[in-house]
Amino acid sequence: MTDSLFRTKNIEQSIQDTEEPEHALRKSLSALDLTVFGVGVIIGTGIFVLTGTAARNTAGPAVSLSFVVAGVVCALAALCYAEFASTVPVAGSAYTFSYASLGEFPAWIIGWDLVLELALGTAVVAVGWSGYIHSLLDNAGWHLPAYLGGRDAASGFGFDILAAVLVLALTAILVVGMKLSARVTTVVVAIKVAVVLVVIIAGAFFVKGGNYDPFIPKARPVTAGGNLQAPLVQLMFGWAPSDFGVMGIFTAASVVFFAFIGFDVVATAAEETRNPQRDVPRGILGSLVICTALYVAVSIVVTGMQKYSKLSVDAPLADAFKSTGHPWFAGLISFGAAIGLTTVCMILLLGQARVFFAMSRDGLLPRFFSHTHPRFRTPYRPTILLGVIIAIVAGFTSLSELAELVNIGTLFAFIVVALSVIILRRTRPDLHRAFRTPLVPFVPVVSVLASLWLMLNLPAETWLRFAVWMAIGFVVYFLYGRSHSRLAQRTRAAADAPPGGGTPGGTP
Image (cartoon, rainbow, N blue to C red):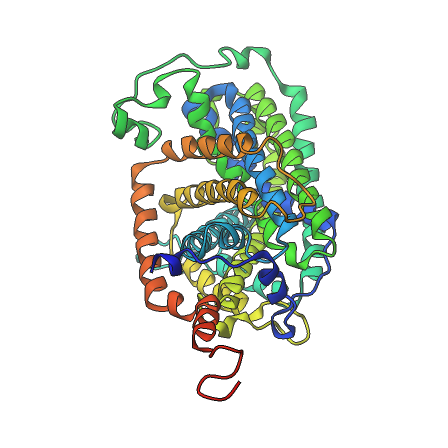
């Protein structure tokens, strides 16, 4: 049984499976397309919302350093992702990588984790997008009924029609093809990056040096019902990172880490890239560097425009401009946020469909979902299924308390990928690696420790929900995936074949 749980799918077989006509995806993406995808999914909720939350609650103006810390953690993981994505250019990202190095059961765990991470992330972002659109409509004097905004407290019923429509529209775009998706994303990313640059440049004229004092707030005791939920570290060791001024930077890093989620989605598009060995590493690392620079610049400007203790936790950028007497910027920023969240939602949905597709192609999920569209060459069946489910979830459910699950799922994937790099270097040193993670095993080990540290700063409730989801995944795997996987079928076929290569029960 142990052998079956940890059977690996070799790299050559993974690549060979992608060449089967009914499972083949169209290769149409370039390094620029991948970089745009990365920037498109990273710049979103974090830069428009989390800056205020992290600065006001823990780090103060030093939140800019928190973004650097989170960016470094992601950069360490990005180096590992880049090696795998260039070596194994197959849809599925961390799921595919772990299948080649750790074995089938660990691959299932990470695939199941990614399904949760990307689905929940898509729904959360769709609801956030809807909130910005409602705000813009309200400012223009157009008001949708409360029950169509998912916010009718009087009747207890509501359906967020805008969030659902967004998910369904993006689902249709993804079904039509990756190239169309790339073109839409390019236009949208250009708009929201322009808005971010306007915020940085215009905001720099209103910075006051006094707002940076103190740059790192002094240590303060954590009181019951404080701004942050009790982290797991406090439950385990009796102290909280936010007890310490400098440690508050790292606590804030675990919060703003959500702002970086998405660069790993670039790896899920490796199979649809014309030259994955060259372009995927460029897309992953390029998008991460660009977004880290923008995040640091925005956090420095915003905390200089308004005292960190007065920053809004809902719309810090817009509120900072209001404090300077320029409220018209709020509309511009809300527009940029809505535009930005559109691409975030689309690329998260794209990534999830590719992971689901890869798992079904391997037989761990029903193979009905592993066939591509005869014309568009996209995984249309899982895209439509997941799009409809997420639209319903986003329409009916408030997911604010579950957002931490996205963080813990991503960090868990980072750990698996880093470990996989070390293992595959030992088991397959002969593989051609177009990009090699430097200083192995040092960089992957540091990546594991850094990701684990941020995980320990997440609420204990998040760990509990994550454990429940994983337990459900174990049941699905042992009842279905383990016996239906293509590796299991090949193993049984090899065992049933008589010596000499003949057919079972016949003559050689």
